[in-house]
Image 1 (cartoon, helix red, strand yellow):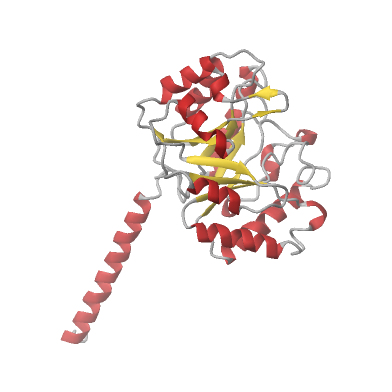
Image 2 (tube, rainbow, N blue to C red):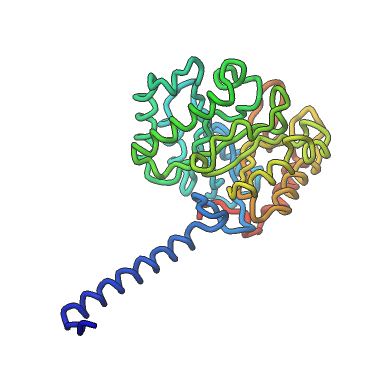
Length: 322
């Protein structure tokens, strides 16, 4: 065996220190990405981000109804783009409030192979560049409720599950190529099986292309037992998230007038989150009046009181991303 010279000894020591440093950095990175393995921006088990989907002009009314401390806002702020619209206005709105991460519900048509053909690449790359320039965390909820029938630009029959998956992957890959690593892609079906009794997972692009799972789950959309246990309901959704080791977001939820304003609707969603502390990581309230229904928290005084009772002073409901 050759004797180790002084210079070689110093080289070996240097390599060991670099490796230890890399290990220390890996440990640090792991502590800053708790929750399901590899989850982007996920909080620790038992913690839940509060979020809201609303127009920026109504945000303060929601904050007040939710009982949030003065000057604080939900951790996640969701808005839709216009069809094939720009993401920049949503990023700008999120910047008007401190520590509020944007979620972009991106209305992107996938009909006629326009995504996979590359015809929309310049537009998609421009959106990726805007997200990258934003710098902070951005959630991308691309073409949500893909297993429904009311979004003809990305639902069947115009866009098959296979076409949807191919389009999703193409968009995701373009974001990676543009260096928009601050984007977390949120795959979000609606409750229950889709046309032909296909399970929501039929539209799933694969773990490598999804950062968060989500579901739109309105607690008064059916009897509560069916919301929980129906095919593709909340129980199935939680099991799917566990199987794929992804954090789960309830991306739209709210009671809906003219149905009764009771605490039961709030209780169902909060109880579901409490029953799955290692899986459910975000609750994004749908604070709109649309389609003849009023979902706004301010118009549900009973529900709002229950909301406040559950979140006020509870450190596990987070108003900033971790």
